[in-house]
Image (cartoon, rainbow, N blue to C red; front, side):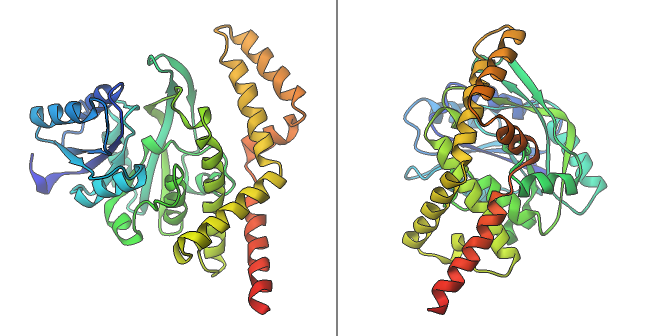
Length: 337
């Protein structure tokens, strides 16, 4: 592999990923685009992840393995990979997801046709723990409609489908570890004001939904809080207001996050999300599509949140923008005392 001709550096953070890691790695190494490198970052795994990673490193000179000295989380692991990357573009793939063979070839072809692009994603196919197809999800392909979804927390491009221009990431700074499980959202918001987004209207990744996913744990609530906090900080930056995620110390940042959680709870965001997830679980609890639809409809209607949950799911939320304005007014009052 010529280190001067690497087009894409694929960053794969790994922590106890042995169940799916081999399939994820093979999906990268079998790409039609050959001029790539795969950087595996082992975040102190206690299973066979490290052994699997080193096996591939020994078999293919495009693979390199980084082992973190202490468990640091996905953001820090990806940042370590980005620091070691040599490609013009940075590709992201989680260790339980799968890239279609033509993914990077198609994305780089699009990048070559528009030099203003800084991030390119794609549609996706969701799969279950065994790899069976659940559904197909498509997204807008143009910058304006993607940004509208991003700012309103509408359904957005899968993190594992994204490639980023490395020179832009190096200027912006990569993932902010304060946004645990929402660091991608924060990065997208910062990228949205320096260049264009695009998406390929074809599923180029398979995203695995399983019991370790965000929606199946308390981290789902944390994800909602920090994603909203990220958008609030974005709107604050756009108004020339100090960014809490950058300027506050750890204690003050936690106070900001706690305030965000309290206000989201008062706005009914968690109740609507819970109602939607409960209804959605009814849909997937049976192999019969008609029965699944009936269960979903029954649960969402009985929740009392049907209208608001559906509107928020498909048109996005206005809550973060309102909370940003509230934070500015609140802070101005405190400073005037």
